Image 1: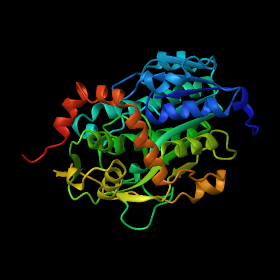
Image 2: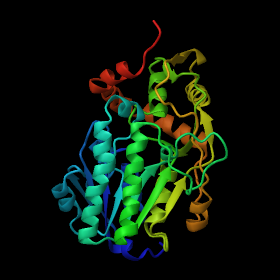
Image 3: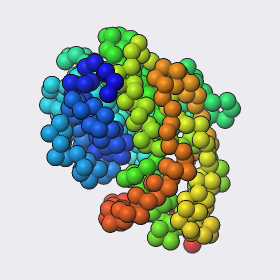
Length: 344
């Protein structure tokens, strides 16, 4: 194992670690760094679940604390004895941000402030702020690098931009070792089924319509969740990166219709399941980023092809049908019915 300094015998606080990407990162840390402890702080909102951490719950290096990053006492309790923070805690779904933006502002911006204040008071080896490519807004021309202006166009991306720049300000003002990452669209096992890939996979398995907003030509860069976590692991101990921003992506751009077709092909389902619905307000047509900086700094590159990643994701949902069928009831069904208006 490569020498990683403080991380080899340190402890990392992973906020939002019971969510989709956070839980994958927790498992990667424990797998890669045998002397590293991990504390997860998670509020366990609708998209967070201890099911996601089932495989590590008995690991003596793992600790779970239920709490809210907006509550300083919760953060102080979880951070005790830790050396670093990786902040995944966020409200993340654009559709929900359009319906109820307040909770996004609180968690995605104010929550970052609380975390930064604790880091400033207690000291820290590294603070990784997980941002998003959506802070750049629509990218219709050449892919953007990390110096591009931030032009968020929905409450989710605006609140993430706030947290992104607030974290940077604590580097510039107080000298905290902050690193900010902006990643493209993730997909993979145990993703909450409100997200497009997981929703379309599970709907197709149930022979239900795949709700495609508008024309379906909106394009995204897609990354398998493990590859995202590998990049974050590399940045956690990278040298001379304080105050820097890193784009994370693969360059694999597909629009919604192309993604839908790929899912239906794997599952052997008919194209007739694609159902166009009314477009959502402010729907960005394309995100696209350059990732040269990350690759040159860390040597990282994505290890999972889109085809392999999508097959593995589909297989996981096929094998865990009981989990997602339970999720897609109750609160989820109410949200789904409000979000998608199918033609009668």
